[in-house]
Amino acid sequence: MDNHETTLNLSHMVRPAIEHGPDGGAGPCLILLHGRGADEADLMGLEGALDPRLTIVSPRAPFRLGPGYAWYLMGADGEADDESFMTSVQELRTFLEGLPEAYDIDPSRLYLFGFSQGAVLSSALAMLIPGAITGIIMHSGYISTHHAGLDLPADGLKDKPFFLAHGKYDDVIPVTWGRDALEYLEAAGAHVIYKEYPIGHSISEESLYDAGEWLTAHLDFITRTD
Image 1 (cartoon, rainbow, N blue to C red):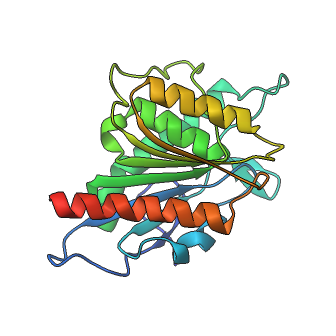
Image 2 (image 1 turned 180 degrees about the vertical axis):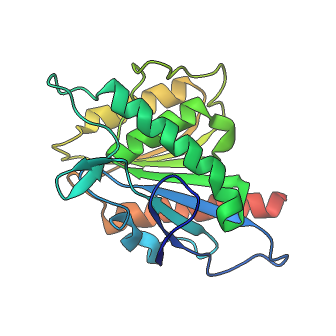
């Protein structure tokens, strides 16, 4: 795993794919989006449990918060600040657009794995550019729809695969918000797997295993149908 200096707009870490397809061409990619107050190294510790066919890229959020970073700031009312939220959405869109050329990634096999604030940003990207994202793992997050410019295209999430994981005892983002996300996505026609775990605001071995198995199953399905 390395910190790479490229022409990409966000600082990031990358783990190149360990296994490659028989044709040796561009492979699938997983983008890890960390939570509030963390950085690009935070979720890279999960890479050993994730499919070796993936190039894994972990960008750093643009807003400094204490020793770490945040994807968006919080207003005095406890709501996400609209300006910083949409700034990160646009920065991530630019980042995703540059990935295929930077790391020989197949743009038709691009997955997101977001935790907490990273999960919120993952859902925002899925709503804005559903055609650019193959599948989304949201862990301990929620869906925010009130930001300016965050309008879901008609049928944009129809059949889009999501894996939602949430801790039953989460005291940062309540589990009821995860259930609301499930309800929203199902109403939008997405294909959702939703699981709750006996944890707080964290990722457990069980939730990571389930997310990894879900991701591998999707990679296998796409490989079989290519």
